[in-house]
Structure formats: C-alpha cells, structure tokens
Length: 207
Image 1 (cartoon, rainbow, N blue to C red):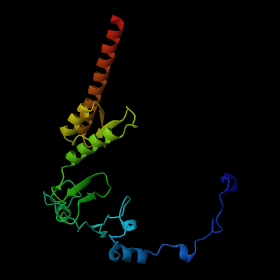
Image 2 (cartoon, rainbow, N blue to C red):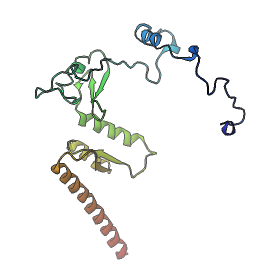
Image 3 (cartoon, rainbow, N blue to C red):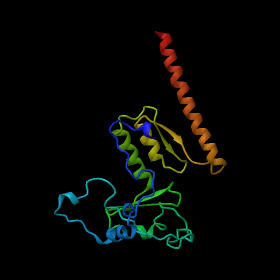
C-alpha cells in the first residue's frame, strides 16, 4: 500500500503486474550452467565465500517405490540415514566430497558422511553440535534446553550434565514403554527442582 511506503521509496512500474518474459528465470539455462559452467579459480570475485555455492545434489531421482535405496540390514527398504546399509550408496561417494548429507523422507532424521570416517554415528555429531552451539551462542536464554528421544545415547545425557543444561524428550509416543520413560524422566526433573528449592529455602531460613 502506498501509505505504508517509507520516504524516498519508489514504486516500480511493474509492481502488481504479471512479470515480463525477460524477468523470468531461465530454468533450462540455470540447470545447464550448474553442471557445465566452472568458476575461474584465478578470479577472486568467483571464489566461494558464503552461501550455498559448492553444494551438489547427488541424486535428482523422485521415486515413490524407493528403488534408489539400498536394502537395510533386515532385508527391508527403510529410509534410515543412520544405517550403513541403507546409506551404502552415499557412503560410496565419500571420496567425492568433504562432507555429504542425507535425510529420511520427512527430514526428521539425517546422516552425515565424511571422507575420513564414512558414516558418522548420529549421537556423535549431535553431541558435537550441542557442544559447539552452547559454547558459541552467548545470546541464547539460560532456559534453552536440549531435546532428545529415548533412542538417543547416554552420550548426550553426559554432555548435558557437564554443561549444566536441561534436557527434554521430544517426538511422539511410540509405545507404552516410551511414554513411561518420558514420565519417569519428567518426574526426575521435578524431584531435582524440588530438592534444589528445598535446599535454597533451608539455607535462607538458617540465615
């Protein structure tokens, strides 16, 4: 709306109109140059400094049958990016890239492949990420907690305790055992909080 414009802002004559052909992205050219056009390494203006340049999608296949997957350990096709069997094709590309990523279909699980190690253990790189983020995000609130699921290893528990952080369970309730574990964890947190409160109260009364 014109009334919302800041002073000295100019409305384009094309504003609110259908874009011209010249304004549209030439997808065919963009795709062709993505594969064929190479940067001049002697030209500083063409060197990658930040952004998504340098990333490569290793598979453009869209197949609802998942035939692009390798069979997992139990002889079934599963989108498990933490399995070396399901990730066999990605692991096979490790010499092509410094680091490669894959996720399952709803992107709530991921796998990381490095050239030196192959498929990384999810709990290992999650622990590294937690350690790095909480050491380098001073603007984060002291109330920030680490979310984990029942299947996460105790490595994350030990790291959270070392950093004096809270942890919470995340995800859906897979079964009664999962729910019981979450309730038990919540009860421990409440009990610890009550003990801390009681101790602080007693120290205050003793003054």
